[in-house]
Each structure stands twice: as C-alpha cells, then as structure tokens.
Amino acid sequence: MTLRPIDYVSLSIYFLFVLGIGWIVKRRIRTSEDFLTSRHSVPVWITSLAFIAANLGAQEMIGMCASGAKYGIMTAQFYWLGAVPAMLFVGLFMMPFYYGSRARSVPEYLKLRFDEKTRGLNAVTFAVMTIFSSGISMYALGLLFQLVLNWSFTNSVLLSAAIVLVYTFLGGLTSAIYNEVVQFFLIVLGFAPLSILAVSKAGGWSGISKHLQPVMTHTWRYVGHASENPMGVDAIGLVLGLGFVLSFGYWCTNFLVVQRALAADSLDGSRKTPVLAAIPKIFMPFVVIFPGIAAVALMSTASGYTLPLKPSGGYNYDLVLTTLMAKFYPNGTLGIGLTALMASFMSGMAGNVTAFNTVFTYDLYQSYIKKDAPDRHYLWVGRATTVVGVALSLACAYLATHFNDIMDFLQLVFAFVNAPLFATFLLGMFWKRSTGHGAFWGLLMGLIAGGLTLGLTEAENKGGWIAPLHHFPSSMAQNFWIAIWSWLTCFVITIIVSLFTKPKQVCELENLVYGVTQIPREQGTVWYKRPGPLAVFVAVLLVVMNVIFW
Amino acid sequence: MDDLRRTTGLLFAILGGILLIYGLAKPDIRAALDSDVNVNLWTGLTLFVFGGCLLWLSVRTRL
Image (cartoon, rainbow over all chains, first blue to last red; front, side, top):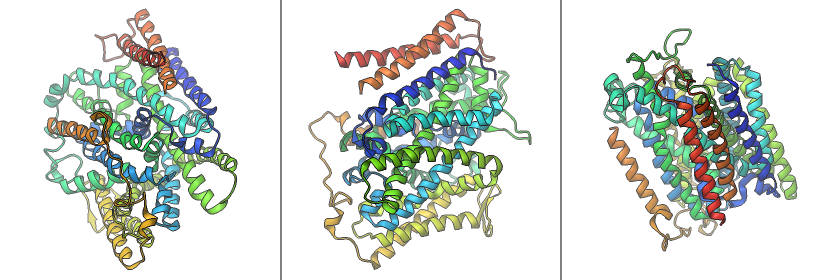
C-alpha cells in the first residue's frame, strides 16, 4: 500500500481538528470534576455516540473484520446477542443507581454500596487492566502500520500517543468525549465505502451466500453443537458466556463505557445514553464484519483478491481489513480509510486514559494517599496521571514487542476480569441483604476461579498451565466457560458470605439499591424521548436482525 | 452543543470537499478492484454532504 500526498493531507487535517477540540474545551476546565467527569454536563446525543466510540478501538475494527473472515456472520453475535441487550440493561436498570448515587466512578459506587476494600480491589484491577489494554492496542497498531505502510514502529506509536496525550491533557473527559463523536462518524463514513465496495464486488449478500459454506452466512442455525460451527462453541456457552456474563460484565461494569453515560446532563440522559447508542450498534456489523465475510467470498470469484498469508502458513486474518483497503480504496479515499483507522485507535486509547486518570485520582490517590487537599491539587493530579497513563501505555507497547507471550496471557486474563464483577453489581443493586464482606470475597474468589479454570483447561494450546484436565474445541469456547465459572463463583460466594455477615442499614442504601431508590416516572413526553419505549423499539429491531440472518 | 456540530461539520465538509475535487480532477485514479466507479468522487460527495448537513443543523439552531 503506497500513500500519496493527498492521503497525508486528510490525516493532517484530522489531527489539526483533534487538537483544536482539545484547545477549545480547555477553557471550560476549572475544577478536577470538570476535567475528570465532565460534571454531568454533556448532551445525550454526544454521550451516546461517545459511548459506542470508546469501545470501537482499532483492535475492535481489525478484530471484527478478521473474525468476519474467519467465522462469518456468527461474529455478529458479539453485537446482536452480546452488546445490545447488555446496553439496554445498563441503561434501563443500572443507570438509576450509578447516576443517582452521585458516584464519580464505578469503584466509587462499590465504596458507597459496599466498603473500602471492595473499591480498592476493583480500582487496582481496573487501573492495571486499562494500562495494559491500551499498551497492547498501541502495540498492535504500531505493528500494523509498520507492516502495511513501512512506517517506523517507534514514530507511529509516539505520534499517535502524543496526540491523544495533548487533547486529553488539555480538555480531559469532555475533550475525549467530543473527539469520540468525530471519531465515530469518521469510523462509520471511512469504513462504510469499503463494506459497500467489497460486498457489491462479491455479488451482494446473495452472491456471498452462494460462494460460501452456509455456516458463514447464518448466526444461529449452527450453534446447536460445537463441532458444527467455525467458532467451536455450543449454544449454552454462547448464550450464557457471551450473551450474559461477558457482555453484561463489559457494558454494565466497565468504567470506560459507564463513564460516558455518567457524563450526561441528567439522569434521564444517562439512561438514554446506552439505549440510543444501541441503535447504531445494531448496524455496526454491516460496516465492520461484512468486509471480512466479503473478503472470503471474493477469494472464490475471479476477482483476484486473496486472503493475506502468514509467513508460517495459514491465513493472517488480522491483515484482512488493510489488504481490502489497499485493493478497493484509491489514493484519496485511502487517506480517509487510514484516518478512520487512526481515529478508532485514538478513541480507544483516549477512553482508556480518561478512565484510568479518574479511577487513579479519586479511587486510589484521594482515598489512600492524600484525602483532604484543595480541589486544585486533584486537578493537578488528574493532569499528571494523564501523562503518566500515556507513558505507562507506551512502556507496555514496548514491553509487548519483547514479551509477546506475557501479553497473550494478559489478554486471556483480561477477557474474564469483568465477569465476576457483574455478579457483584447484580447483587449489590438488586439485593439489599448483600454485604461488603460478601462482595469482596465473592469478587476475589470469582477472579481466582477464572484463573483456575484457565489453568485447568486447554484450547488451541492456550491455558492449561496447572493441569490440562479438559479440552475445549476453541479458545473462544474456553473463554466463554471461564467467564461462566468465574461469574457463578462470585455470585454464590457473595450470597453465602453476605448471609453470615451484617448488612448495612436500609437508610444507608438510599439511591444505591433497588427498592430504596426513587426511579423517575417517564411520563408526559413522546415515546422516543423516554428510555423504556425506546428500549422496546431497539429490542424489536434486534429481533428483526436475528431473524433475517438466522 | 452547537459548536461540536459546527466543528464536526466543518471537518467533514473540508475532507469531503478536497476528496470531491480530487475525484473530479483526477478521475482515473482507481484502486485495483474498483475499475467501474470513481470511488474518490462518491466518497468525497458523501462526506461533503454529511458535513454540510451538520453545519446546516448548527446554523438552524442558532437562528
């Protein structure tokens, strides 16, 4: 792939705008809360788009296209079975407690609802995970640019990190959120032409269905048995592991996304944020997964496209997206495509950085290091943490170039870290009797159970480092089952320990738990402005998608 | 927030405008697999129109 000046023009204009937004927002930053939480001031259309953009990192784009080529339309399960129902749930049932509690972060909610140690455990795991994830995705992007464009790894990683640092340092969360809106539109408009071109070249959906095995063009038909579908997952693992534990764990408890909804200017807005975000989310597979499926179909037509190969043999699915771009985008549009890829990387990284600095400043620094400083001090700490966060991510990216195995292992671990947390939240928000001791031990045991399951099972040569007692047909199936065991352990242990320990007084649980929290009635406005009816609309849309691609 | 609509609209109008002009000026720049469509022209037009819509929205609310 060779770039021409015109491609660099688009990329440079985009960079200018990104920095400009940071500069404009900077004027509004006076307190630490302006910087770290946007002080409940962002309109709902903006938080909704930021809510999905923060998740649309470069790894997501590259990974979804790769999975499309590898597993076909079944990949859409990550959206249609996974993300969307979880987004509706967090909006309708969890935001009243998150927003109503006035907590500034997810760990802080745990402190208010349970106790200090539960907050500490969550804050530390979250902070570590955020830094490593952002480092790993930086590494992946640097490697990709090196391979495809011959850019130097160091330069591309440093440049993109520097830009993210500048705009998050200047304008904090508000700047990150505003940029995420721009990034969202760039991602959609930059990748949609690729999808349209690749799918139409492959003869449309009917052409694709004709060229491919039927397993590639159905979401549900082949999930009855693990051996029948390319993902190697069974229906229970898929529905419980992905559809319930992993998706709800991610969308309902990951501060990276919850932070966007909390920035909304009202409780109503924060509830509508994930629900509205679910509408574009339903359609994202057409932009991110379809090109991958079309790529495989193109192989069996006389188009001249072939899937990229690994030096060791076998297909290198991670390169599908960029090779498709090289084949379908002329110089000019190619610049837009690359800008979109860069935008997706930045949105993911800024999401991590802004979540990290908030959790560090409020949940670690203010709670354990310095309690009663003037707010100016915490604003300074927030800014300093932004710099440190970016620097640590960079360090991780370099670590990844030397210790690939460790990074692989960490990604396996991160895949289930949020799984037990969802059990903690479910019990915390809907069961008054659950206690701090219960939550802490449940969470800890849940994490350990996840680690043990990983150590005792094996799939595709991953895991099994204690003793490979069980073999899974695919690492995806392994991942789903680890999540299920981890969740279940946390759920059971939390209940048992809670029953033996003293609960909080009911008056202390106001605005934190179902039953002692006023949930506003949604009346007097048109249906599409109310979270409930909107969610019903989204659910109908979701069912339609699942039926069409059954 | 109308200034975000304006900023985003401006970005897309500029990016789309440049691409549109490029597509008109150099219609034979094609990628390997799209011989029959001028991709730059159509992508440029789409981005430009999208940017224009956002700008129109931001102006309309301020009036």
